[in-house]
Length: 104
Length: 208
Image 1 (cartoon, rainbow over the protein chains, first blue to last red):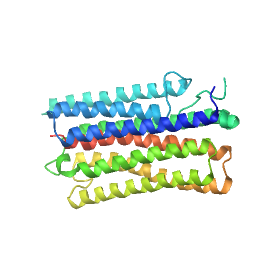
Image 2 (cartoon, rainbow over the protein chains, first blue to last red):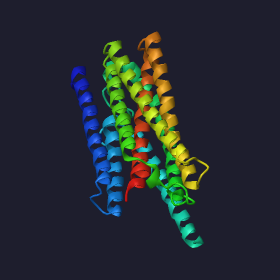
Image 3 (tube, chains in turn cyan, green):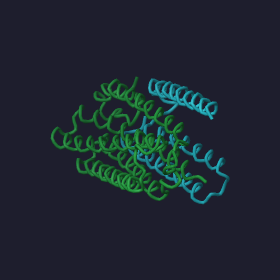
Image 4 (cartoon, chains in turn red, blue):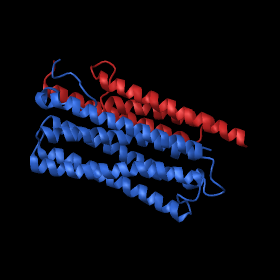
């Protein structure tokens, strides 16, 4: 096991890496909208994809959630919450867009 | 289980303070449960926003109301504050000088307040354009979602002040350390919610 001094440098490096990655992802997302390099549907997919990657970066480097180490309870809680979020959000969108289509 | 293992979300105290680390496990996990329920609440407001997006009733639309530059600045400010709070957590964990800990927390606080200022300025511009919550379903859902995040930043800022006072009065005992760990989770969490807001609300509204 490394000493406390190494772990400190390790942690600072984790925050700096996370910050750099998050900055790059943020700039990429805003740039893709600002310079309109793609058709709107593609841009939207790119923006949402970058957002998902950035959330994973934040969870990994700022909140120190990892698949390897023993933060298992937290990981299960996050995965379960994500499942709930996906079911509720996609359910809401499907039902209400379908309703709107039928009302038009 | 050794004290160096990661036991909970966020920065772990580990061997630097084994006794507090032991206690932090359940405390931080409980706070994490609250954060995830908060995430579900935000997710449903996002769903509402998505459904309400076309309901502009001839009023202001996302494309005229949002501006890319202010949204970008707000994103940079909040992201930087997440990083500076990370530095504060590291300073706390490794018993750096009190000045260093309070310094990083102070920078985070300033960035948080800057973010709130920028956001309030945005809302004021929208109001003067006639984009207020009762104008249309789209604007109601916008003002339910984005200011709720702003409210989180506001209370987070108050919490930072409270923690700075606690560090000054109690020093860095176990309770104060665990509180700062929880505040760190909260602060990083509201930054994650902001990622969803700038992507789904601002950038989606400005794509054309």
